[in-house]
Structure formats: C-alpha cells, structure tokens
Image (cartoon, rainbow, N blue to C red; front, side, top):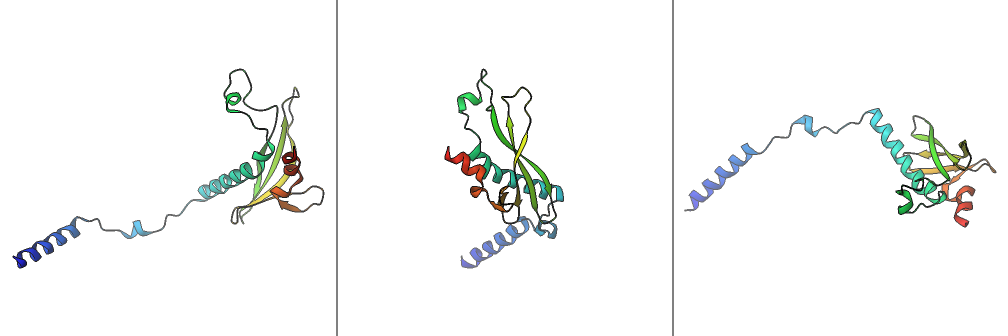
Length: 149
C-alpha cells in the first residue's frame, strides 16, 4: 500500500509542475514608467499636498447642500486656487496660490503666494513675501491669518 501511495504522490506532484505556469524573464522585469507618467504622478502629489496643507485651510467651507444646490452657486464668492508654474529635473515643482474674487463683475485672479513642492521629499514650502525666505506652509502668514478667523 505504501509504494502505491508514494507513487501517486510523485505522479501528482509531477503533473502539478506541468500545470503550473512558468515565470518568464519578461514578467520578472520591473515595470518602468514613462516620463509622462512620472510627471503626472509628481503633479498629482503636488496637488494633494497643496489641497491638504494650504487650500483646505484658507478656502471658506461650502456645505454639502449649497454645493449641489440649483439655486446657489457651487463656488464661494471668494476663493483660492493654485497653478503649477514650472518643474525642474530634480523634481522641484514651482506653483502659485491665486485669489479670485467673484464679487467683482469681472473677476481678476491675483497671485497671493508662491511656493515650491519637492516631489522626492514631499516637502511643501511657501515663500514669505516679507522676509523673502521659504517657510513651511503652516508657518506662512496667509494660512495663519485665515486660521485665526
């Protein structure tokens, strides 16, 4: 009985090896991303950092009912947005924080702050216009002014 059992185990393991797929060398190679994909990922990381560290603190909160109301506008009359200005080869992205006042008949965007985002370290810095040096976003007067109110 034992020789038959070991023969069956050997037969099953041999047949299992023939059924299992063989990993090819092409499948084992790491997937490389194109430059456009890397740039898009860096811009997305920059957008998320700006949204969470800056815009969330300085934009007025719009309630869920007002956001989807047919009567009221979905955007507040005054709000801030951002625009990516440039990017260098080291992964440093320069951006601007723009204030838009829709109370005016012809709203004009005004740049209120400039900053940089280091995509390698995920560090977000805003340039302090008074001192001329770059500071962390939470230390910038724009965010401190709006968090006090």
